[in-house]
Length: 78
Image 1 (cartoon, rainbow, N blue to C red):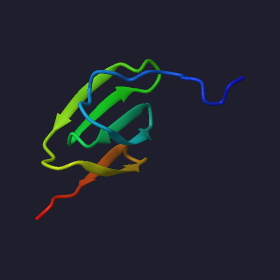
Image 2 (image 1 turned 90 degrees about the horizontal axis):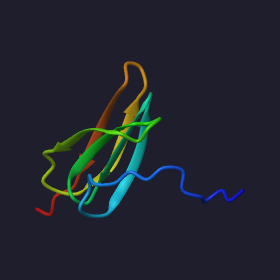
Image 3 (image 1 turned 45 degrees about the vertical axis):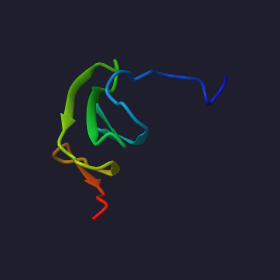
Image 4 (image 1 turned 180 degrees about the vertical axis):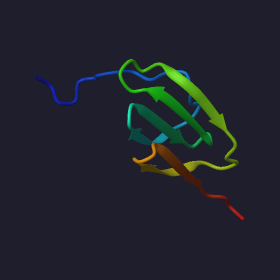
């Protein structure tokens, strides 16, 4: 068994590098250089939401398990 084998492919949400992936209960949240966060159903990989609002790349995600929620962070070049 190949431990690096593809288990699931999450496509179509990001237009640039994905920097982080976080599991929050039954959800997966991805974020990256395009400033977007994508929310997927973990079991099927179905995209549930595409969140736009960061004006810079998202460099971190924080998952808080109870109640399920997440937070993101971006950087700006001021």
